[in-house]
Image (cartoon, rainbow over all chains, first blue to last red; front, side, top):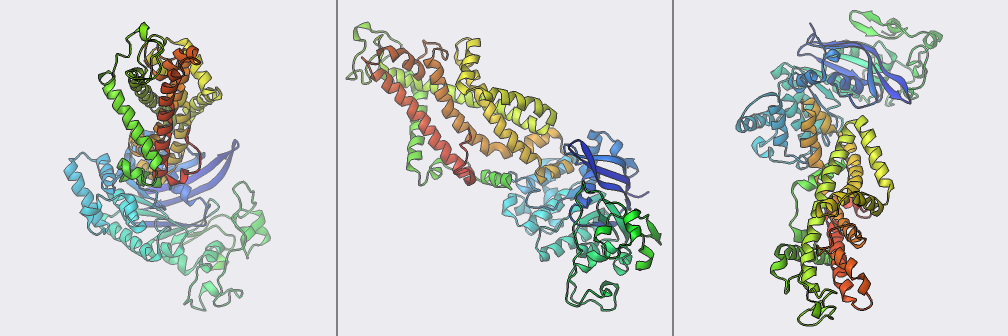
Length: 334
Length: 293
């Protein structure tokens, strides 16, 4: 049984009494101890998916309109709010994009870690403080005992993200959702945080759901990748297969829009004649607004390979050895 | 971000008062005046030269001179003693109003922001109350109640609950969307712990500023109610009551208006200056914006 199973999940935004779908019947699974990356542009629904899993949509105009989210075999959407909250933090934890704002500015970081510890375990103040120190040490914060008394504004962005990770680890979760965990950080710090996450994953055996718009981050960390476009998963594969041989033009476009100084001229990535050496490709157009109607394949208005059939029919999922693609020409691409 | 700034500024500092007034001599003078009023309020009748309630018809309407430095009123009571004793009432009304307005206002504002449908109801009621001019609202409420210290505090408190609720509603809505609140939910925090541990402490500094302005406005409001005969019972020597009683003698005994009037003005002005200094200190971005009330 997979640890996390998202089954035909649909999410919609309520605006002016209408429900505009933003996530359309996406399905994926995450095994214990594995890492799944979800990649896509802003507005493709990747963050909403993670918020839906964590149950953070309450009080927003966003509604789950269909599907199931099973965690350890239990349907999260059928759970009562209180039971679900108990599960959160205990079995699943989340870290956010903005380490600047995800800590409460009025408390010392030690108190915030201790709060998370005591949320799930009865122990004396002394024990939880000691545990908090251990956690800071695990996330490689120098002088952990001293840092417990720091306020968030006294720490750098990277340090704050480490503190967030420490809070997430407080309950030894089976699943960690990381929503753009390194986007707001310097590149050098980014690599350190990713290394730290992987290392902690090895030590604790937790599964990670990593949400990012950065293919590089995904390539470095994930076993499996799902590429999202306009609320759909358009391609899903192991990261080795996906990066070696993308089977969807959108994935290909994303890869081409990453600067790569030492591209192999014969590789798939630069076979297109328009892609002169030293030139960076961008995907033309923009993501259609959520209330815009697109017939056929959601990507066809921006796709250089679009044929009449793409305008007409929504492509089915083409699966080849577990490498799925939602493109009419998936098989000709690779 | 704003909550972060507000909060982190709160963290290390409920600043030593004198640092707060660096480069603001007028505000410092205001602060000293408030300390003086507070001292009068505490000492009260102990330091007055005469019994503030003692009637002495022979010496009625005396001009300011020794031994009655502030003169006497139409009953021959010593004005200086009455002004000194009035300080206690001023302080009680001010602090009482602050407590009532901030408690109710915070409760309404925060709960409305957190529970949307409750908010729709509560904030519409607040809107309706805000449609009345403050004094009119206080007058209407006061006519329904007996004249007493407690009722005066409650009524003025309700008047300023509305503005407090509105301000805190906005700030709580903003806090509700802060990532650290989501993060706390993720770590399994209950709603009560969210509100008490994560929201309220972040509202501490705006509440402090709000308190200073409410204190000042409460003085004016109370004086106005007293003057109209709807505030404190007439036998209590408050500054407002002194104004009300002396208005018939204004041409013969102007000092009867002068001293309590000056006490009110100085106290309100001082509190506003201190409030300004506090606000600038806590959040410099408000410097030229709204006054908060």
